[in-house]
Length: 279
Image (cartoon, rainbow, N blue to C red):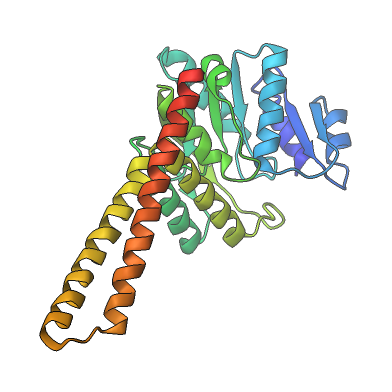
C-alpha cells in the first residue's frame, strides 16, 4: 500500500515523511525509493509514537502546514489539497479533521465499528470540543498547532489526546468531509483492542483535566448512597435490634468507595495545580 500512498501524496505536497514503525517488510525502503523522507523506529512503538516522530521531523524541516494520513490506503491523498486549502484560506483554523460523518463524507466501515467511533467521539465532544469523527487520522495541522501540541500517548489514544489538548490550548478545530475505504489488507489493528486503548486513554486525560469532577462527583454519589443505607441499617436496628448484613455491607462499601474517590480527586487536583503553576 505504501508506494501508492506516497506517489499520490507527492502530487499535492512539497515533501512526504513516512514513519517506518519497526516494520519487518520493505515499507521503509519502498517509501525512500519513491522520494519520501523515512523516519525509522528500531521496534514497533505504536501509532502515537509514530505521530510524535513525524511531528518532530516536521518541526525540524520547518514545515508551515502538516498533513497526516494513514499509509494503508484508507484515505484518499487526492483530498489533501482541499483540506489544506480550508486551513490556509481561513486564516484562523489550526486543525482540519477529515470526517466520515459530516455531510458529503462516507465510510465502508461496519455499523458496529462506526458506532464505536461515535461513542469515543462523544467522550471528546462532552469535554466541550464539537467534532463528529475523533478517530480520523486524516488531519491538517498549522504550524501553531504543531508547536503547542506535546504528545505523550504511544498507542491509538493519541487521536483523542490531540483533540483534548487542542481544546485546552485554544486551537480552532474544524471538519471537512472525506470518504474512507476499508480494502482487504489495509488496517491490521484489532478493533476491540483499538477501541479499548482509545477509551482508556481518553478517560485518563479527562480525569487529569478535571479530577474534582471526574472523581469527586462519583465519590459524592457513593457517599449519598451509603448515607441512605446507613439510615436503613440504623432504623432496622432501632426497630428490631438486628442489623442486616447486606444493608450494612452496602453502606460500608459505599462509604469506603466514596471517600477513596473524593480523596483521589482532591489529591490529583492539588498535584496538577502545583505542576501547572511550576510550568
